[in-house]
Length: 118
Image: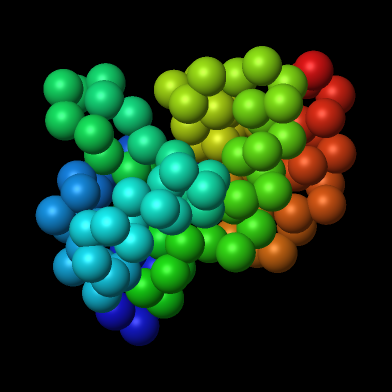
């Protein structure tokens, strides 16, 4: 895929299951699992099946600034579900969702805000 998988970061995200991720990323299942284990992606089982928000994928790759942000939020004590919710929710300080800020190239301000949540 040559474009961001999600239409807009502030819309309700499409969720990609493991088979979807294999297809979108063009990687074998083992490599997709490793991307999740190494915090390049994060997902949830809230719908019963493990899935990742599609907005976390840009140009067929995990958003490059996502990994560090995931690690900062996990260090702050966030569960995977909580950090996904935080990334997708509108934030007054940023004036948009943290994922929209990451997509716009503002990782420093997102991580600075995430560090204050610890």
